[in-house]
Image 1 (cartoon, rainbow, N blue to C red):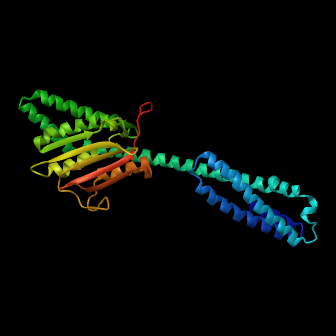
Image 2: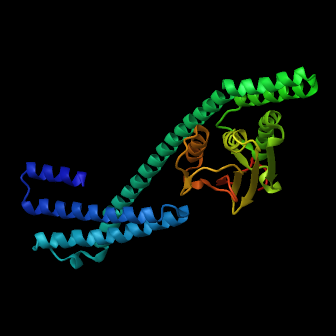
Length: 340
């Protein structure tokens, strides 16, 4: 369309007849309509295998080139009725007009379309990666802020102090070691790095064992991870804010304490993780917590969204007979070289 406009300006400058301007206008308008149709066809086959896309480009571009050439030839005869009929030039002249001009232009347009499309997708992936990294680092900072929270450290150190006063030095030493290992993991682990679920559970146990000393029999934990899910990769530090939320609402605020259940399994090519507590539960509407603004839960959802996009789900629902159930579904991935 741009080149046709430039040609029209050139012809107007040199005083070419109006018919030539109309020919340019018809050719440009028809080309615009045809390439609009090509764009919708290419969008339809965009996710198909590359051979299907290649065949579509070559075949559809030729069909549209034929249509375009017919319209341009007809406009020539319409605006210049004194032109000798096409059959007097042999039909090879018509074929050469298709292959040498119309088809070539549409193939060039198709190449430019796919080039721009890939460039835009590349830019979107770069922006998505930047957002994911920023979100993950923010998640790490929020977790560290919690880990260094005075209440957390005070409660943990107070439990250690009590154990020392009771001359239970072995348990106190074990607790210090667990606290040290857990804080070291929090500081050293890159939040963008994925770890296998078995490793994540091991780290989670360090945190749970610390809390177990605080709450004793009031905190009950059940972990049920199927063998096929143990090597599945998950974002590092994924479970801590979920378990923290359960401890806060299902254990800490209840005299009788509560139970937390963590499950993991593989289903239909995805990893399914469940964190369930038997606390009072939280008002949930359509998988969203309506009256709760926990930093840990909202951060987990945002982080999963940035890492997996539409390929994941994170839902909150009511557990039976009471409590909160968190369902996470992410693509099943393993370290290269490991079988699914």
